[in-house]
Amino acid sequence: MSVLDQTDRRVIAATQGGLPLTERPYARIAQTLDLTEDEVIARLADMQERGIIRRIAIAPNHYALGMTANGMSVWDVTDARATELGRQIGALDFVTHCYLRPRAPVWRYNLFAMLHGRSRDEVEEKRQIIREMLGDDCAAHDILFSTRILKKTGLRLRDG
Image (cartoon, rainbow, N blue to C red; front, side):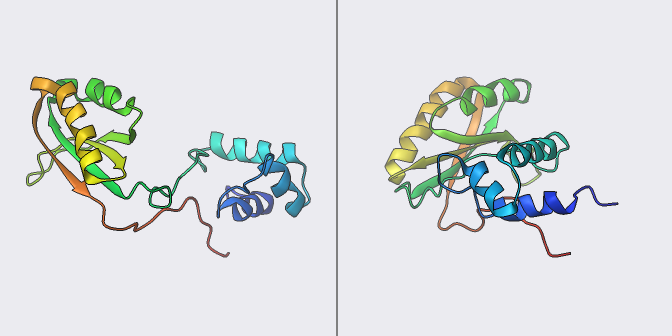
């Protein structure tokens, strides 16, 4: 038995390319699916509760917005404070996402924070702000600048 019925699949198919840029996007989707706006919202909420959809959010194309210098900053921070430090960094308005990862034998970094800017200098300035926040809890850091977008999509259904 599938966790998705045909109406769920139709709602996903109608939203997988993004929500319509209109004042009432769910109403617009509802019109195309012969549903009500409330039914579309309820189905999306239900799928979110069941973990089928993790979240509904804006995923901006930073390049189109002029933010062409995008760098994943990586940090080797004190393990005992990594969660607390990650929360502080993640709260910065210029950090779009921040997360912890396990260290690897050839990779010492355990904290990652994505930084965006119009130039590499702007991104480096942001990285320096984080460096100063971390103080002695930071043993090393680096940054990996993006050179192109490899993937920027949400949930996609295959036929069948």
